[in-house]
Image (cartoon, rainbow, N blue to C red):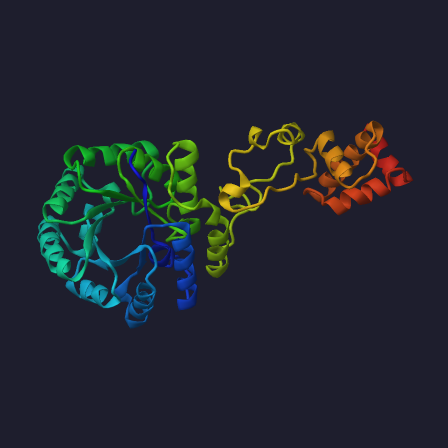
Length: 384
């Protein structure tokens, strides 16, 4: 079985999100949490941004974490020299490969292939390994892209990155693209870098892995430009639970690192975000909760402790059933007779409809306390 190899780019592509800025202490904390999660390699910055960025990168490198460190560079010698000052293990050199990007940058095929060999040879004395990026690979001519990847291998690069730079791929076209590259390049490690503009970054990254791209570029929470990148936590759990492939990451650290990055990036996590959203392990439906009380796996794929969380108590609301009412009354050592529960359930539904939300346990107990008041009976009677 091929081992998925995660390359985290939260500190590079993640921080490129509009309005996101990490302090050095925050970068160190992210790096420490990624290290505890077991990520084997992280892209820690763009040295061409200047001395402050280089100093931050050098500080992280000097801390000797367990992961490899990577600098992101444009295809210029000055960028590579700046990366050498940052002290990373490796350097990533990104080339435009689509006609739309080459035209916008004033480059052509001859320039790309000429610089490819020259810059790989230039970089190697300064770094342990050199990786090459095919920027906008998803919109490149397939013939050019195949030639680019084969040349990358022939010139001695350690890995090639296929970037879906504007997020146009779907799982089927991702699988097809990676498969076509694998037809002409059997050995060179392929990295896939997805963007989430159409909401398919996680699925595309899984599809790329299934097509034999073993290196997966991700960020915490999917943080990144525009709609972001493939979220590390989603890709890892998709591998494990949808493809039955161990991610080799410590998934129990996911809740901690995702919460931290959400906080310092000022990008609150959606309540319904897969894996780490506040309500994705919560249940209200009576049909579901009656089964969940017997076996949590009946209507919940992910055990909470698998991703560093605690199992959520059931929500009480419009879709609750009698079993939920009985559960909370029994838990509070309150009598839970048949008639009491039937009436209380109707009161719960009425209150939830009025408030347009689930109700709290305290609100449930208030309804229970006032169960036989004139007002409560009136609500029940109006229901029929």
